[in-house]
Image 1 (cartoon, rainbow, N blue to C red):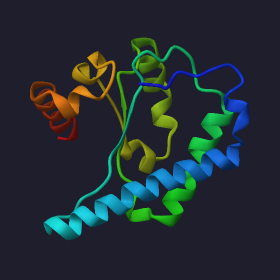
Image 2: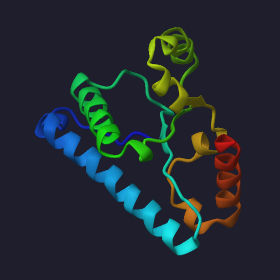
Image 3: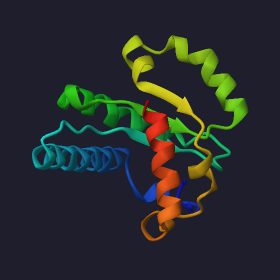
Image 4: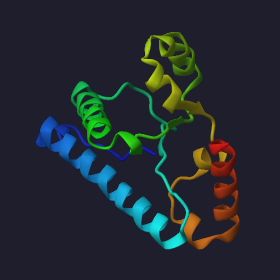
Length: 149
């Protein structure tokens, strides 16, 4: 779920700072995947999932620029790690819009971009139950497994 924002708060962070942060987060994910691969003997990867439940407006242009710039840089730095990106729980009207513009994306982007419904995730107001309630965790993991097939 999107973090609560406060007016003027985004102005405190520059686009280059956001790009650096997004690249840092992706690097951490890559390190975790590498460590798990080494520990388990199985190749692990990263799937980026963005739950947009409750989002009612398009992100501000600075955020969008930072996100797209960091994605482009990440693909250049780690071409083998640029995996799937899931956009979850997109409102119906935006799904229709995306359906119209998705064919305009490069084929490599189309292949990695997934728009899915995740009702279990949409009902969560916070992630803590996934660590404390075995039933919530089991439902969530079953939903994620289904999405990745």
